[in-house]
Image (tube, rainbow, N blue to C red; front, side):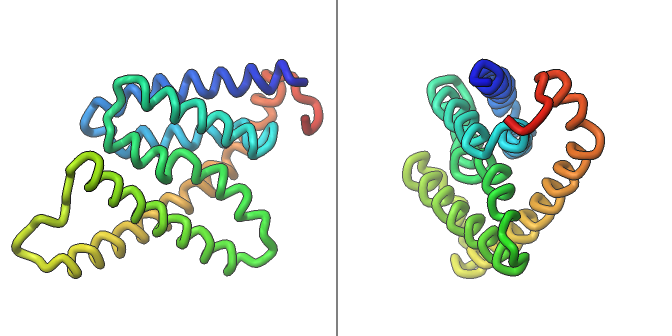
Length: 181
C-alpha cells in the first residue's frame, strides 16, 4: 500500500515540477500554478488529503530551487497549489454557507499575503499608479479577484465531477486500487 502511495505522489510531483517550469513563459504565469494545483486532487481523492498536501509541499520546495517565475511561485505557494486539496476538506462541512465563507476567507487572506510577499520581497508594487487612489485600486483588485476566485472554485467543482464520472475508474485501475487505500 505504501509503495502505491509513494509512487503516485512521486509521479504527480514530477509532473507538477515539469508544469511549474512552464511559468517562465509569460502567458502561463497564473495558468500553470492553477493547473498544477489541480493535479494534487488525484492523490487527495484517491489516497487522502494529506498525500495531496505532501505532493504540494514537494512541488513547492523543488519549485523554489528550480528556475521558475517568482511571481507565479508566490501565487502557487500562497494559494493555487494547496487550494484544490483544501477545497475537498471544506466541502466535507455540512453547512454550504459556512464552507463558502471559509473559502472566501482563505482566498482573501492568501491573496493579501501574496501581495505583501510580492511587494516586499520582489519589489513589485502594482499600486504605484498615480491616476487612481490606492483605496480604489485595492477595492478593484479584491472585487475582481473574488469574482475570478468564484469562477475558479466553480471550475474546480466541475473538474472534480468530471474526474469522478469519467476518469476515476481508469485512474483506480491504473493504480490497482480496488478499494479506498
